[in-house]
Length: 153
Image (tube, rainbow, N blue to C red):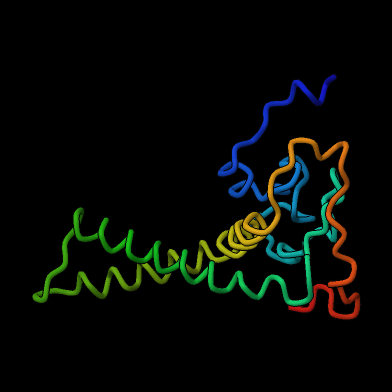
């Protein structure tokens, strides 16, 4: 009865919080994102709540590099527009160079979050939310998984 009272996370809350897309309760990563970056990308092999495998097949998360690149480009465009509106660009001074430096620092600082977010987003495109996950088990993907290649990225 207690589990039925829990508020369901939205899709956006699930992806931003790096929760399992199937049950929207279990965390995808073993450690929280902190300033100590060692092991921050270590994912659980399966969701600790519903048992959904996080690596669906060998090399599954290679696609996240495209998602991360798309997010970095979107952030760069957004920061360029914000810089242009707030400060402006000019050929008479170094404001464009200052924006390039600002944007580079922004992307470096946000990179750990972007990597985790892109993995969460990528997984959510392939594993759909199941409101009845307690009565149904996760889809069997054991034929696609090669234990020797697990976490090999």
